[in-house]
Length: 107
Image 1 (cartoon, one colour):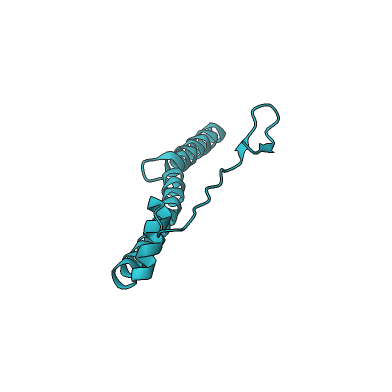
Image 2 (cartoon, rainbow, N blue to C red; image 1 turned 45 degrees about the vertical axis):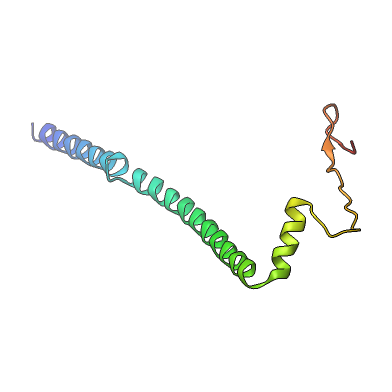
């Protein structure tokens, strides 16, 4: 009878260990959620860095618009396709992919 009790206690201990191990891994604050949160934190950090670089670029561009009239003139010429009298603009088309063989062709 002593062997049976000893064996039963070992099985119960094993089941508790398995149960708590499962809860540690999949529970509401378990390892699985921690790994998921860590992955999400890295993703958000990369997005933040990208937005911060864009913000700095836009601030520099704003300062250039305020302080440099040549920069403003260049942007107006580029975006509105406006020029001075006698200037000629050349507009080039981009290459497009063909449908059949996905090679670059000129349209």
